[in-house]
Image (cartoon, rainbow, N blue to C red):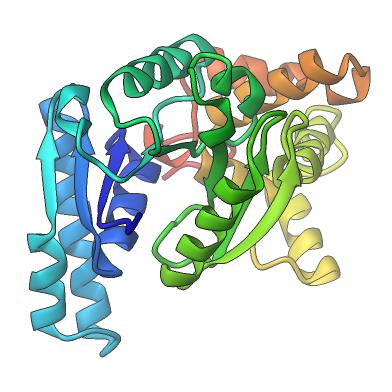
Length: 282
C-alpha cells in the first residue's frame, strides 16, 4: 500500500526534524505532542530550518511553503488513526514508549508499520507491546535530522523482511542512507560512540586534560569534526547518561558504567547546550 501520510509522535528536537524531512520529501505529516508549547517550538524550528535551505539556494520559497502546508500539528494520538506509517520520537523511557506503541497498535490499521527513533531501547521489547511485532522496527535518525544522512534501521526479533524493505525504500525517498543493525543495546552507533564519550568524561574527572584539550586532540589528532565532549553537550548529557545506563544494564559489563562525573553533572541540571551549561558554557 502506498505511504502518503506519516505520523510522528513527539515534537522535540528529533521529532520536529523527522517531521520536517518527511514534509520536505512530499509526505503529509501529522505531528503529535501533548504539550502545546512543544508544538509551537517545533513549528518555529521547522520554519527557521526551511528558511535556511531557501537562503542557501537548496530549495525554493514555493517548495518551503508547500512543505509547511503538508505539516499539521495535533495534541492526541487518536489523530493518527489514519496514518500509513508511524515514527515514535519521545524521550528515552521504556515504559512511555511501550505505552505509545500499545496505543498506536490499537488505533492504526493492522498493516501500518510502527517505528521508533530510539537510540538504545530494545525494538523487540517495543514490538511485544503490540499485536504486530513483525511490523515494528527501529528507525534511528541522527541529529540534526535535516542535515545528517544516516538512518540506523533496527530489526527486532520478530520484524519481518518486508517491513525492513519498506523502511529502506522510505529512507531512499528521504535522501537518507539506511544501515541495518541488530537489536542489541545501543545498536551500532551508540554502542561505539557512548563508550568514547564516557571515556572522555573519565579523562576530565581524572585530570588527564581539560575538556578543550581532550576535544582538540580528537579533532586535530583523529580528524573528528567535533570533540566528544562538545558532542555530548550537543546531544544532551542526560541523553548520554540514559543510553549508557541502557548499555550497562543490557550488557552487564562494567566497561559501560557511566562516569560519576557525568551522573553529577546531570544531577546538577548541567545538561549541555539545552540548559546553557555542560562541559562548556553556552
